[in-house]
Image (cartoon, rainbow, N blue to C red; front, side):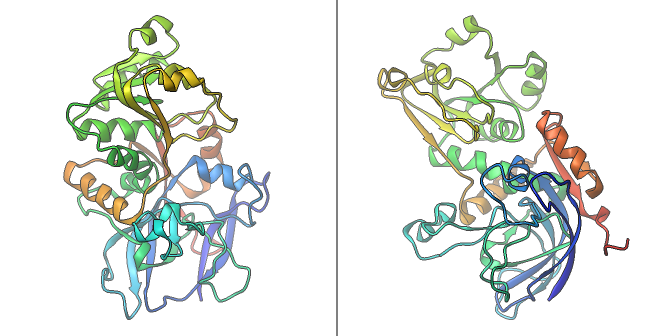
Length: 356
């Protein structure tokens, strides 16, 4: 067994504190990674606080993992010691259902094995669950390990493993590119990546935000236009304009206002996860044969394609690097939307033992 130190929540209301645990030894197809950086996702907070259903405690969050390979199993062919690699939201799937065979492991019929808080059948103790990247090391099957381009800053590349692929996947699926008019709703951890990707793919990009203070930042990130969504006249002027709108907002909001901005046969895709059900007016959809869809992260092959695109175009997340012992303050700041636009933990700040 590999003994690790991580930071864990022991209950829905407890702060994250140092926690020692064991990972499995490196098996024949496993890659052992010394973690250098791990992004902080809002999903980490939801899970640690049992907001998406009861969690299995202790919870070690973290699914935006970047590090260097320290060891590989005897049958591993894709990686070697020293490689810069990443692990995202999944560490396994059934690999045999139609979704898995199509390279869409995130939609696995049996449900993927998530990087943390999932039953861990690979661990040699019955009833174990997975632990995430708020730790010094991780062991994962090579089929779920991703190659990070060496020209990218490892810290700024970490959020690509969730925020990046979550916004890339729908843009790729709907084949967004030159000639498309794209709207991005919300400029947060997801939205700022959506703007960068859509611009790099050649689309004309309009950012929709409730905050006039984000106009300058939206344009800095590449948005061609910024519309303040609280301005009813400005919104009315955008009616029937867009081929595609990506909604990256997790707070409650009226999506009918954005559906009205789509052209005939336009698509609106949700990647944000509001806590309350949305009310959708039928006429918002049927009037122009518009469609409303959702999208969740991306498969392993698609994630690698996204990372390679980022390496070619030098795209990373805008980040604020924190120490491990600043994680609880970071959670509070995420809830206040006080980050531009993703926290990343420097794992050099993680204690080697509980006594450190």
